[in-house]
Amino acid sequence: MGKQWMKPFGAVLVASSLLVGGTAYVAPGNYAYAAEVQGVQQNVINVVGKGEIQVKPDIAYLSIGVNSTADTAASAQKANAAKIQKVTNLLKNTWKISADDIQTSQFYVQPNYTYSEKDGQKIKGYTAHHTLTVTYRDMDKIGELLDAASQAGANNIENVRFTVENPEKYESEVIAKAVANADVKAGAIAKAVKRQLGTVLSVSQPDANVPVFYASELMSQAKSESDAGTQIEAGQVKVSTVLNITYQMK
Figure 1 (cartoon, rainbow, N blue to C red):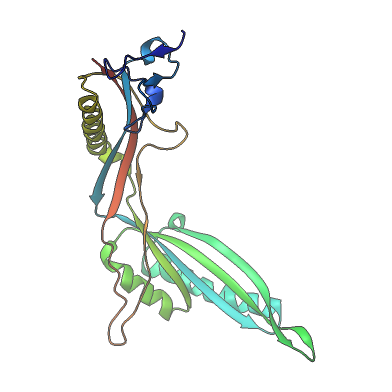
Figure 2 (cartoon, rainbow, N blue to C red; figure 1 turned 90 degrees about the vertical axis):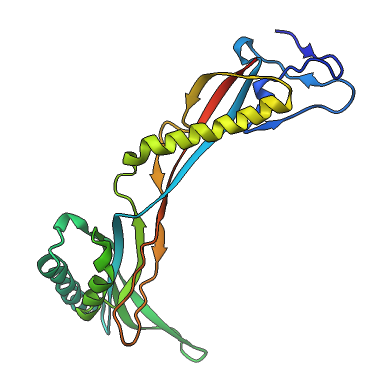
């Protein structure tokens, strides 16, 4: 197809290449220039619809770690192994957490260095570190669990991540919100260029390799008051989706 021109301030031709994400482009001067387009791509509006809801999290990922320092790497590792075993036994036996929900996420033994102008850098002992990521579903007992783990020897509790285990169950609601959002954007664009919004021609997700629905993970540091146990507030997390929708324009 050859290039197309619009009459000055007359009928409006809107191409998909000129309307992306709700933004229209008009070249300066007395004539508006429309880029080359193909058949059905004339007279369409492409917009991105975003749907989002806030929900109460139903799963948490706890980062529970143990550090040990000793003169040798072997001694540090041995001491740490005893500590982490005690914490693991607590989680499995006392708190009845499945072994499938307890995973080692980090493990290392590293030297500790000191430095002086006289002697330079020297090794002064070793630190062993072992972190467990614990999947837990009782939101009301997270603080109590962290306190128990600390008493059992966990001396490196890093954070708590909250999310929803199955965001797909909110699929219909976030889709409806995304479509409604796209309708508003497309309607506003059509009105602005003095046209009418037609039927939906296509709907797609941005990337087929990425799940459409996801829950954002919120982090909360474990903090303990001197006269009370650790208080953890789960709050709410966001479940959202994004849809690319193409509309016909009359």
